[in-house]
Length: 637
Image 1 (cartoon, rainbow, N blue to C red):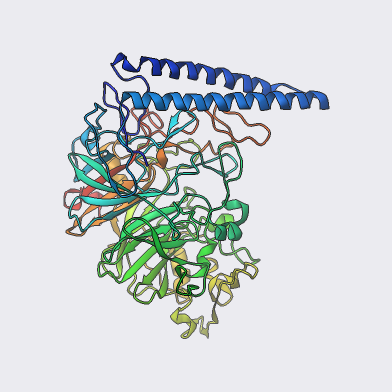
Image 2: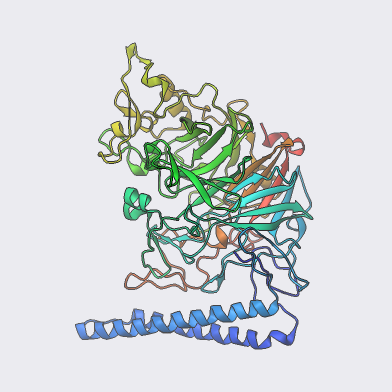
């Protein structure tokens, strides 16, 4: 995990990366090498496109074309490697910070470097203050390398956020997800940095910045560095739909230390708990980031024999998660007794003749919450109703859960749209609303029904329409996937069948009629449930979307010393994004012979700017502090 900067005469926007900003002549040779390499890459791209487009009818002509294309591809790959090396040399010449080792303290030198303006260059307003993620001296964190010349932003620690109570107010831990990746037009994830090690970053909020002071790389139980590749259990359960490819379309291997980290919680007893969107799993790490034990839906009992890792069971129906929509949020209750995790989206658990299909299940209204008692590792399972009002075409989903006490929680529910009027996704194709939808909702588990393997409904069935219901529980991965093999079943219907794909309030009513109480009403108008409409708040501050305009706000923390203060962090996706969902390739990209490469800046993820969507800086990591006492009443519950 490099923590470094690019020197420049003028300040760069956080996440931005530029070549040639130094006023010193000392780096002239390196600049010349970059320029020459860029020209070679441009030439070789043109040659490869020309070779790919050339028509060939006969077998002999096709064979010749194949050889020419292969040779042109080799030339381009070598040219790109030369360009990346030249750019790295220029970075080194212009000034770079030392690379911290695992758990090392981030240090800086006296070398001049671009500083990131406090509060993003804007004054605090309406109870909010912005803290861009930077080095300790306010300089830009070095990219995690380059992807065909596009910088992979180094401030991608906003997938989760947890207060560091040991060091006091203003100290937080953030976490990366599995690493830089984008989706191709065919939906397959492409990973340009398969050696990326997910990490926890320690931040201090001062001087207008979230200053990165420590990087803790995640390692497996064996001590091997973790990576973002798919674990074998998931590959078996989900097949090729979970696969990852490199930027050339080659399938990536599976890994026993693969993790898709999404949320981080400080363990007061030492170390951290991390939610893993694969599985889903909950992983406990020691203070150095090494795995000590985990929770998994792939086991029915702890298989440890005293010498192997302890693995405690989670409800196995959670394996029916949608791809890339697993356990997105995790929190620890203030009394330290319970871990509580939330699934991002409804399960795809019903594909039987009476069940919903995988496609429509993703638009369902009901998601799952698990509550783990740490003293004995027992698990309860509850239901959360999303708050969309139509057909959920924008795939509104959960990103975080934060405990207020043992039974009351805040849930971060959001769309995937940027802020600003006429908000849309980066590809410009999603059905985003005129303004983004991002809210914190308050939920209560006090009277919610446990729908897990130990549900009270199994011993005390509800009466439905005057008749005692038949309630069973089964989630056998070896058996065919049907509504009666998807966890709790009431009168032959799974939870997802009962809820259907209707609006949340209707789903909640249907579940209530079946004897199941959810943690919330699913209605946007229910008094007391809205905690904060932060999308409305930042849109009110800047309708153009240039104030905390991120599409993925995934970290939420409550200040333990001041519960009226909330901190939000964004997942920047490392500043890269999906190839357009309409199946087209960027203008400077090619597709031939199964080669699914993204060339040039086709994957650059840009924030809203003065000119609208995609005209701002490259997306970057940022924390927003919200003092609820100063927020206008229209945006809070």
